Image 1 (tube, rainbow, N blue to C red):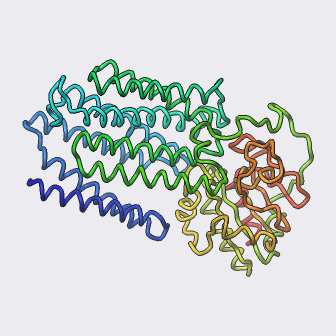
Image 2: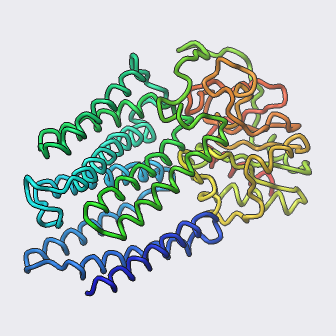
Image 3: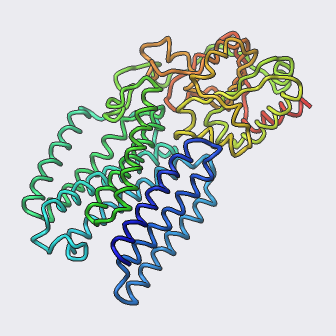
Length: 466
């Protein structure tokens, strides 16, 4: 295949990737966006193979085996993973992208002639910089994504894990990495390269472990950006235009999304990256047992209240995802609308465990898009709502974010559900949210707690509405 044709095909794949990102920006076009992305990736893979085909049968066999194994694993995982585990899956995929960047950089270092960047001992300085930078970002992405996976999967506490003098530690590791980077470029030393990787592995851990659960959606987006920049860096080393374009698109879009989310949460992007928030505040005493009474209701009570309401705003959260209650919730909404009730859905920017988590779940249940509203568009309507039906959300509805300066979530914009005439709150128990903060809304006079599994509770409400 000629170089000009390859460049044209890479450009086509890049355009398709851009169309994919545009399509994924809205639920109505997300399927088409996914299709564009798949076609673009298929073109990029085939072009790469035809530009530099394997020299012998062994090379073809290894390449086909790799594609078959990776494709099979990806297909099986995508088919089996529940929507509740999607954030963990995304974090796991980010870690693999980061590790791939490290391995490709190592391959370029040990076999530079295969990449056209010189020979051992005489690798071009620019290529040394590219592979070192790509490996460093990839290593940070790998361990950072592993920590994010453990937090999202509940295998590690979602609360901030504060290391002594963590900011000084991170600055020291960053400075050491720069020194090693200069040493590697000037000497091409293999030891310096692996020390860069080792320091980056440690930095990935120290950057992510202090970040609390409420910031996890930002972390997932941020790691997505890191994986893109790692891919772009390695793309320069390989001289692969498609990898450069793809990496730059993923890196820039991930960074923009992270910034938008931080702005929406009233958080400093830099402060989140350097250790999350809540580290210097105490909030409720650790291990304190809440003894204040709450008003507890039943499915029959909830059905009666909502059936006689004019306006109901539904606030979904991670508890809905865990219970897979989105389909039952949509049926309940349809039933309420048949009784003349105006029903809307309110989505907080960080509801769930990753950006857009709740939107995807509601779209899966065929909830009409025009009934789903973001925080800024719906918050003013809670004061006119008869019922705010909170199903599994916690931190994003906690009034402490507005009233308690000692709270780790203080300053984060929340959904003003407490302004509704009645707040129906479905939870399994009185446990705090992912950020580890007690929700003051539970104890308000206009709040009724509905304890139990979210799906079972909604099913019971649905029966009482019929």
